[in-house]
Image (cartoon, rainbow over all chains, first blue to last red; front, side, top):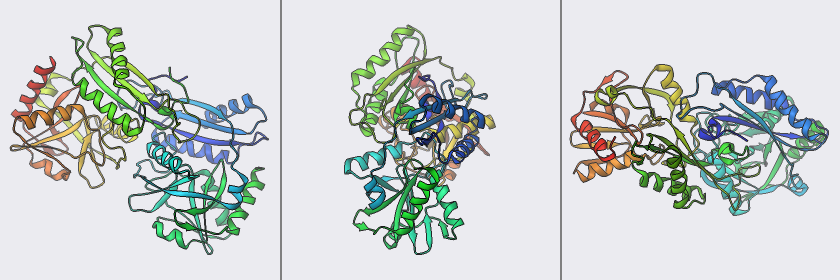
Length: 262
Length: 262
């Protein structure tokens, strides 16, 4: 249970991480998750030591033994009085939650999914990149995807440039170029996204991180989404556009599985 | 206490109202507060009946008797599993909290306050107008005001047009014109703001609700802020600009006091 005066509830004044736990009890990308939450906490001026994160995760792993699942870690600025002003000496709230892992259907991973274009516009975010607790645009966009029966919904910014899906980052392959949108003004800098960018650079790919208009996607050789739960999810169809399966995406999927026993 | 899986915490998926309770147990502007939260709940598709709001407020008033104070009402979409998708049949969370009333110093009300200009830019908000639980920009802006020792901080949008203060709406008097920023793209549509707009229209003022650049404020005959806790708070100084006390602002303050026994 949580205090009703927690600032995480009152203002979304906090951060979260969603981690995949393998059946072997290992947590893929944990150092990247930890680094992101520590950086976010610094940015929001919420005191947090790396050891506290380790302990919160360890408690979940201890309670659930050798079981595959999903751990969510939530950090908030803790309780405060009424009003936006952060307390001078915050006593942060940090806790973990365990969720069952819903495996992505094999057909989705092999043949791709159909996604749609959300009407909800992703607004500029003064805390772009952070996985913070202000997520109303994502809630609205995910509700749209649900109404339409899409596996995911793509969010555009006010310039009609795609930024991300509701809970996954976006990539496209153009020849020997791997592209993903810049997240300087909005979006969550996913740890699976970071992992793939490093891999692709190491493999000698040209990597481009910048805003591109939606129309560019049409010319892509392949489109896919990433997050740390699913890994790489190919996109087969977006509205009236369709893409064939791209061999590079399948190879990165194999690399993901090999690296994380997935 | 609150469930750790409440979507109010997870995503800021909810709304709040902050009500002033007079020593006589009356709640100024209650019908406007109630209407705003009901409209917000409809907009977010959170089921809420007016009777539930009445009961949550009545419970607070019963517990605290004939005592002046502040009641905060919080509504969320309730608990949900992991993921942004709203549950098909949400069971909303609704509760009230009681806070002591901190009276605004008489000197502030009579002679105005000094405010500052926040560096935090108020982003466009797909849910502009609503008093929702995604308030990180306000937290950042209020922290700025705190560091500088300002009574309030003024927030500009990306076009450098003033929108509101961190917890108060903005007004200016230009001759026989009463101006307040449009809140179509960002900001909270305050109930004290609504009250004053109705009063001013009834009094025959020309009323203008639109975006104006910051530079226009310099030429104003008077600047003030409003919310339902403080009423009307004159602004004496903003950065290098200063305004004399404006008799119209003082008259609206008297009207506020007369109407609400304040």
